[in-house]
Image 1 (cartoon, rainbow, N blue to C red):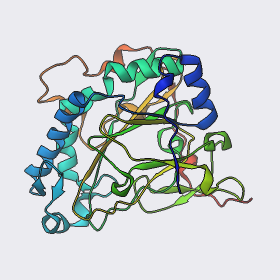
Image 2: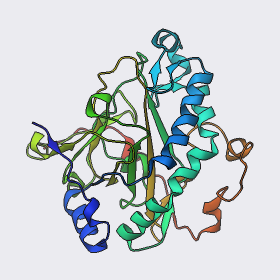
Image 3: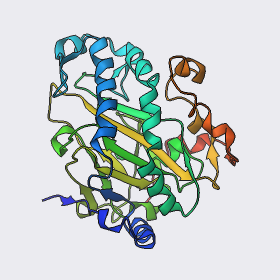
Image 4: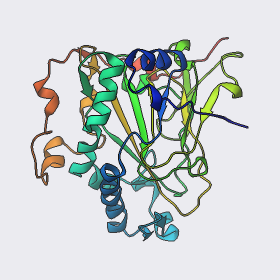
Length: 303
């Protein structure tokens, strides 16, 4: 039987205990952290984009018109996301998508974890994992080579709807953040990389997984190894957020403040009703770090 996530909800009133568990396990899992009324409107916005592009058969379940989706040429797909480039551009234009990561509950959580003011990375990743034949589950990897900046950047992953393991939720390798940066090799799936572990560094007993209900949140630092489980649904779309947070005082790499698509911020902001979150990072005293391309170069692991 797989080992399930340890629920850390009871520690939300004890910042020291919360930090200690995060440092021990390399992840934190919370039941019902985010209120459904903050998530369901964003889910509706995302499914509206899916419907606009002709792939949605049932908005209640997220059931897709599989034949129409499969006809989308691979050359026009964001295979790391699960939908076409044009559809993902429409998603990135949504004001609700960029507002949700600033939810007060999340800001409070990370302020507790960092014991510092919080920087929300502007580069939000919205996975829309579909059964298109060019889409593969995300392989086991660390986020640090892809994000860089500080190793203390934490990823926040949550679905916009119930997401049982059979629908492709995430699992994490508990304690793997203590291994440091792991050499990588190329792989299919989002990110295009996978880590190379040595004997004794990875055991099936160390992997943690679980079924997610709407509002559940998983978070982990940039060196924690994690991957997506394969979806067993052949006609559903899995909607989820990857948001990154770090202490304001630590270095950030500039790409983390760019859109997760080819659009400019000016194009993304065109239809927004409010300018409160536009270019919010420009008002902050940021400490920038250089991009290191060597971290994404495949390297043979010698154990």
